[in-house]
Length: 228
Image (cartoon, rainbow, N blue to C red; front, side, top):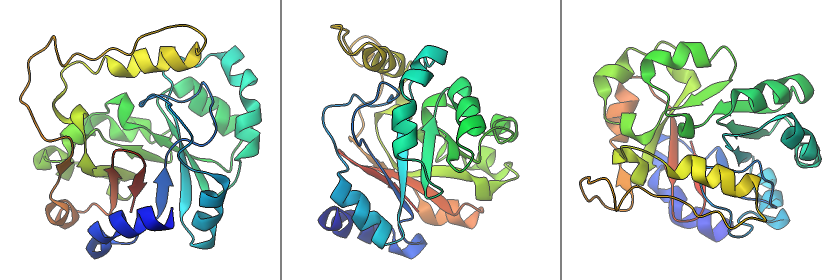
């Protein structure tokens, strides 16, 4: 973790220090967004984050959480419960259940939900913060109209979701995690729906985003992600 932060942390010093890191700890079917392949944040990594006042974000962005799935994974929520941990959600059901049973968790509406700036105020009734999709990070006219910018995170560095017209990977990954013992394939529309070929990661204009009032930025890499 220390060496990883040394590489990526230098990219954002001008706009604030790294406040949180997100990635996979041990497996839970509640994961979504990216396919779980292995543990990315170990117990030693978590100790390092804690010692350096960096919070942990858990990407529990499965889109198909029901009561049975929630109850079966209470052990995971119990294990990582704390006021310095945020839960990224893309299921309002999961967010409401966590709010009821684990009030100290901070709840964040994930970019997986593909939230439009005009709908931010409605989502903030349930979530502490909202992450807009990377496709919004250069839509300055829409972003300027958001009222509670201090509760909104925009991408400073994002990936293929920027210009994906379908995002069929998200539900297919959620289904694969929910049923890990089946041979579900992860779907991608890249070969079936034409789009402009872009670099794997796009860097957005942090200075412009900062000037219009945003102070919370999200960054992705090929492994972990982090926020300022």
